[in-house]
Image (cartoon, helix red, strand yellow):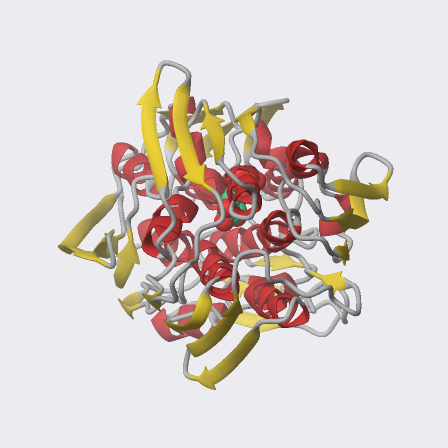
Length: 450
Ligand code: S3P
């Protein structure tokens, strides 16, 4: 598991044009939800294109511990025989969610309204992240939680034996919190209502409807009001997981900053709650186009073509777009370093409580590589140096964060001298084929001895 084994230092050297097709893995958010909802359905759910990264594999293991039969048939094809809403068994051991905030928070929600007790833990990154944002609303259902100081893992949850439905306004823009409440609401009688002031990724809502739950979404002055009717029988589904736009971000951004590049990234899910980075890149002057736009499994999908973009300029990224590109700010800050002018990113406080404090981690590495970064609690600004002018030549910390590691590896492809991360092992949590895929396009990534 990443961060538990020997660190893998990794170096990225400046390289020639990236060319070819990049077949990125399945969407991480949809993969977690496919396993969890499959485990809560009655009958067999069939999944193809599942992301087989460590985060999702930990969720698969957890679903087995709660009593579902989860089988990997090879080649991204999985089946889940579910135990039904309210049918989770009490796990015998501790549930280790590794590096995954999505895994632990969604699973906490899924078990919170069953009369069972479960203890959760994770790696050093996950055990440092706030869980109160999930356990506070779960307490309203009647769930008890005891963890470390500040609501940190390891933590034990005692599920509510007689859950009551909940009406809750999510205080932070978080799809994980929203989803935990909805999954808990599945086994509460009556209607559970979640209100979010800012729209966050809506995969849980879409998939709950697909599994046969009664769920409505209304746009009101209060925000998005999501109403779920509890205690449905979820019907097993056949799920084709779209490819992950958050993983596509890496080859796309690399192509944009490396002279002569032309990369096609096929079959990318472009759900509007996820596609903010691509709009931002286009506003910066990136040569990024959508080809073959279509709909698959209720989600918009397209092939992305990214080419070297000589006239990149810094822009102000609208804060209301933040939720739709929250995982993409690290690699955006790399592109911003090669643009002309300032890229101003506001309303991004959530970046401070991800797998790492992502503003701090990127600011430290970018500054070491010669780029000016200013930051505040919920904003940061990167002053770009223009193509060919970013020094690089430093070893930076990935702080147990896959997206930090990959962002700096993309950066090293276009800096004057190589970039090294102290530990590339976290990349396996979300993008296990990253080195091979980027290498096949023409990147020069090497593992060093520690
Ligand atoms: C996710 C939600 C986001 C995102 C994470 C995946 C999800 O987290 O950063 O990578 O699948 O629901 P928050 O809910 O903390 O914003």
